Structures are given as C-alpha cells and as structure tokens.
Length: 171
Image (cartoon, rainbow, N blue to C red):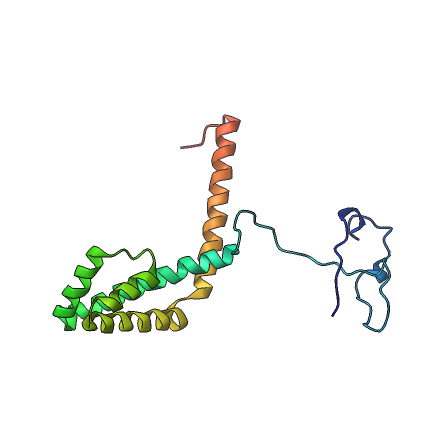
C-alpha cells in the first residue's frame, strides 16, 4: 500500500521554481525504498470542525432521510385523499399527534398504532425508498445548492461593498 506525504507549502512547485519536479509526481514502486525527496502531492478536503462523529455529508444525509419521509407522507396523504377517505382521516389524525421531524420514529410509531396504521407505514416506507432512488433529482440538488451559495455570496459581498464604500446605488 502506498503512502503519500503532503509537502509543506513553501516546497510546492508553483511557489518554489527550484524544486525538482521529477521527484514529486510519481510514488516509488513497492519494491523500492522511498526517499524523503520522492513524495507525491496529496490534496485533502477541508477539515470541518465541530461535527464530531459524523461528517457534514452524513449530517446532510440524515436531514435528507427525514425530508424523504416527509415527502413520502405528503405523497401517500394525497393518494389516500382521492381513493381512501377513511385511511386519509386516520393518517391526518396521526399526523396531528406525531411530529415528522424524525422520519424513522414517525414510521415506527405509526406501525405500532394499529394493524391498519401498519399498512400506512409500510406504504410510506415504500414511497420513501422509491422517491429517493428514482424520482429525486440529485444532480438538480447539487446545481441548485451551488447556484444558491454563489448568488448569496455575491449578493452579500455586493451589499457589504455598497454599505462600506458609501456609494449610493443608482435608482
């Protein structure tokens, strides 16, 4: 197994032209001993403090998991409203008494309410899985999230510059 050593900033080739680039790019083969000069540049992602046991992606996935449960409940409720008013009323009464903040707890409580509610819970689990796997537009989520961050950053920086430069905007 190869190991990579991150170089300190002053030794990066784009900062220090004296660095021998031939010794940077390729790790040595397993049969050869690595010299201290033969290292590979290894970029790491940003360290995000304060997340403890889970990465920001894991926290985001947990929130999406609960969101998918919310979406599934909305879909099932809409379906029931049109073809099974009795089940619709049972589900809406259950919704009034139980929070959707934790999707798994909501479904577990729904399953244990009664045998009729168990069927509703199973339907919600089925819809939640199908929506996540087949209907949710993951690429669109990334595109929209990046767009929102970029637009928000631009707006905040523009507002700050206008505020601190004492330039009145043209109206």
